[in-house]
Amino acid sequence: MQIGELAKQTSVGVETIRYYEKLGLLSAPLRQANGYRCYSSVHLQRLSFIRHCRALDISLSDIKRLLEYQTHPEDTCQEVNALIDTKLLEVRQRLESLHALEQQLVQLRQRCASQQVKDCGILHELSMPD
Image 1 (tube, rainbow, N blue to C red):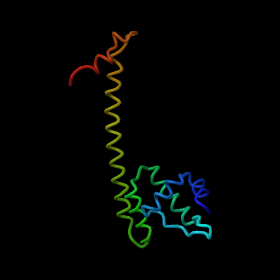
Image 2: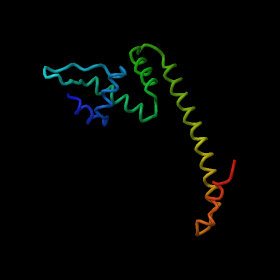
Image 3: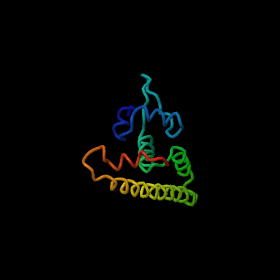
Image 4: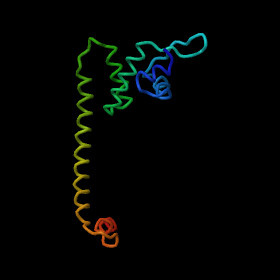
């Protein structure tokens, strides 16, 4: 299949596919006589894997590691699990930060019950020096 079809089937942009090739996440496809790239089902599967990882906010360097683990199917999953555990910890820390931000915004929102900007407690509070 050509790059446009691969992009369509995986919902990944053409330029992104080329970028992943440049990074070595996707192997270079064979070229047809006319110079067009010819992608296989292996490319489709790998690109789907990468897309799923990106949807989980896994970095490209970590995706590269995960792909390398796939080349050693006899190894244990210890390092794969450790990578995901680290990602879980990062997500939990971000959630804590977001919860703290939410609380600050709730408190800030409670500062304004006014109808006019001149009496807005939010704008007054934001103008205060630290």
